[in-house]
Image (cartoon, rainbow, N blue to C red; front, side, top):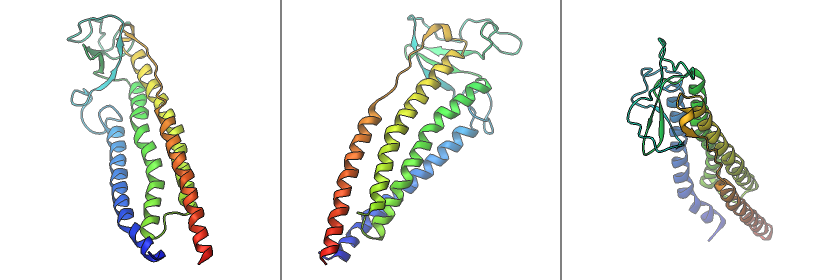
Length: 223
């Protein structure tokens, strides 16, 4: 197979990956917009009651309490829990899900940061993937630029994935602590180390890619 035929064989796959990546990036942009302007965000769309898409957090209950309605807490004239100074919440069992019926401004900011962090990380990773797909569609994918992109993706998956895990854990902790049900739930902060394993796999792929780049350069030198 000639070099030209070899390059052309990558074109259909590169085009397919490019289309899929563009669609995924569009969905992530839409998700960020919906989260930001939605009822739990800036409230530019929908009502303030949050019943259709209530802000919720999974939490570990301190005791097996049967909660089927709003918590029995004293509410003042401004619909705020007088003891905790926070908006009322509803906790359900056995799923131990805390629903925020009327989240405060600070809770909505925490929610936006948490919920948009994932799509933003996805966009940062998808961009170099898109560039690699385009290079494959145009010709040889085994280039130094694509090798650098793979190293970047590996770094983003590792560091970005750990950062997102920490953001998610901190956000859930802060939301529960700032709710009227804070005393009913144990604060458990967990960080996932899965991104480290995924990053190592991608780093290994980048190393293999470097070998492919060197082999291509050797072939070019002998022609």
